[in-house]
Each structure stands twice: as structure tokens, then as C-alpha cells.
Amino acid sequence: MKKLLLTASLTAAALAAQAGAVTVTIDCGAGPGYDLCKEGVNRWAKKTGNTAKFFESPNNSTDHLGLIQQQLAAKSPDIDVYLLDIVWPGLLSDQLVDLKGKVPASELSGHFKGIVDANTVNGKLVAVPWWTDAGLLYYRTDLLKKYGYNAPPRTWAELVTMARKIQAGERKTSKAFTGFVFQGRNGESLTCNALEWVAAFGGGTIVDDSGKITVNNPRAAQALGTAASWIRDITPAGVIAYDEEQARGVFQSGNAAFMRNWPYAWALGQSADSRVRGKIGVAALPAGPGGRAAATLGGWNLGVNGYSKNQAAAIDLIRYLTGPQEQKIRATVPGASFNPTLQALYKDPEVLKANPFFGSLLGVFTNAVARPSGPTKGKYNQVSQAFANAASSVLNRKATGQAAVTQLSTELARIKGRGW
Image (cartoon, rainbow, N blue to C red; front, side, top):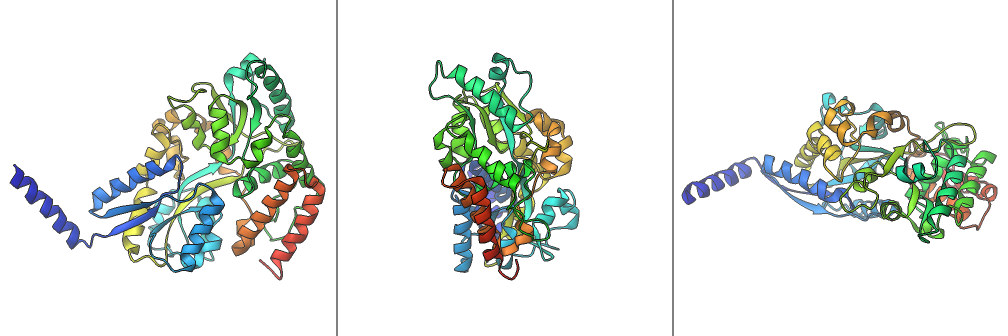
């Protein structure tokens, strides 16, 4: 028996060598999806005879991008496959492999077209969609019932009213309780939150599709000022340092009535160690004064380092991970709930059983507000940081909403120069 096993092992090794087996290193991100990424990659490695190495990138999106840019600037081949935010293709396209023709059109057609378009720069397919996101409102179903509410808030004004009432009641027994948490840390997460406020208030999307700077308007100013008024009222002062995981930590520990976060937080909230397990509702984000609700389009994609020495294997890995089998696993395993980019999976009974809100909120995911990465192209990162700085200055009470958007408009004009 030992001899047979040894022979089988040697045969497998020989076949792998004949097939040109290589070691592929992948950026698996960080946080809840890191281990799930490793499991999927290991399934691919077992199937193909290749081996894999894993890189855990910074949890903060801005730091993650900076690291990728640093490696590409050094023409480093160390990481073959990069995990890319939906707004990065325009920034990185020159140094990533063009996947058009290397990933069959029949496979791409199954993904949401808008996400494929977002990953296409000047006709070059920079990355393949892996999971999509949009901002959502999480709420405590038990507390809404306790305080006489039959449904989640439809507007931001309603959220403030409800959060104040629940917070006042819960603080009688828990001084740490707060009404609402979001991502207020200066960076890309704040860009996403602030864009939702501005768009919901009718203030536009910072820069419009034609490339015109539009943020200097009264409604955008009102949106930022309104968000600042929540702090130390229904939102803790520390929210200005919160990213996604810190906000989730407060909510999942039972210390918040409402939370803005991405879809991944739902499955984690149902985990065995969650204090709010079975008490979480998910809804579209509230609307602004004009009745419009806005959710920022998020999502992550996989691209190949242009300096990789293992490009064929890296492309094969991407096709495997973004295929229906792996996307379904990521959508259904406990602790996951990553939104598929493949349209067919939104009709899959197992996916809908694991994530009941996927069906009812499909419109949120497919009609989310895009950040202006398309019109601002390679300058998007500067635009985003300038917007986040402006929003942060308002949240920190260093500027009024109007002063912030006025100064921001000037700064964006400087960044734009003669054109995006």
C-alpha cells in the first residue's frame, strides 16, 4: 500500500512538472475574506497541481492601494494576482495585464455589465469582478419593536428621530449604547459614506460623468453639515476614527441601534459569538430630503500584475475564483455573504436562503451610485482623498459644509488642471 501511495504521489508530481506547475502568489486582502480566499485558492491549486502563496494586505483601502502602487513602481513580480477595489483600474491599468481575449467573452457576459465596464479602461480589461458591494443600513429588529417602530427609517431625518429614542432608552442600562455608527475615518471608506449623503441630498457625485466638478452646491454642503450634527448626538465622537470593522464591532457587540456597512457584515452578525444574532435587519440606506436614497457602489476584482512571471497560471486562477462555483461558496458559507457578480446566482435558492435580503435589495446592488473614478481616470485617488479631507474637516467641526465644498471645488480644479 505504501509503495502504491508513493508511486501515485510521484506520478502526480511528475504530471505537475510536465504541465509547468508554478507557484502563484495572490493578494487575498484582509479581514473576514482572507481565510475564505485561501480556501478557494487551495482548491484551485489542488485541481491544477500548482502551488500558492498568500499575501495579507492592509485592511485599510487607502493603505492597500499605496502598497500595490509601491510594488508596481518597483516593477516587483512578487505578487502575481492583485485584489483591486472597483475604483482602482484607472489608476493601475498601465501596469496590469490586459485580460481581454484571455478570459472568454462567454464568461464575462455572466457578470453585471456595469462592473465589467468599470474594470475596462480605454478598451483594456484590467480585472475580472469577484464580488460586488453597496452600502446598506443594518438595524436591530428587537429594538425597533421594543420602541414601537414597525419598519426601518425611510429618510435620514427618520433615522435621527428613531436613533435618539432608542439610544435614550438603552442608555438607562448601558452607557456605551449609541444610536448609529458608520465609517468616519478619513480615507476611502469616508468617501463612500459621504458620497451617499451628498447624492441622497441631491448634491451630485462630486464630479459628473462629463468630468465637470459639481460638488460646490448648497445640497452637498447641507448633507455634510447634517452628518456632522449626528456626532455626539446619535453617533459617538470616536466615529471619526471608525472603519468598517470598528463600526461592525460596536454594532455586533450590541451597542448600536443602526449601522451603515457593506453586505459582508450580515453573515458575521449571525455568527455564534455575535450578541445580536437573529436580531439584525437589513434595508436600503435612508433617503434625503428629496426622497432619493443613495448607496455607493463597491466591490472587489482580481487583476494580474504586469510584471508577474506566472501570468498564464495567474489568469487561470482568476477565472477559477470568479467562476460560479467559488462565487456561490463565498455567498453561502457561514460568515461570508459576499455578493456575487454573476447575475444567475441571484436566482439560486441556496444563495437566497443564506442571504434573504439579496433578492429584495437587488435594486440597491445594481443601481448603486458610482464614485467618479471613470471621469477622473488616473487622478481619482487625489480626487477621493480631497473629498474625504473635506468631509473629515466638517465631521471634526473644523469647517462648515459650505466652506468645505467651496474649498474642495478649488482643490479639485487644481488637481484637474488642463484635464483629467
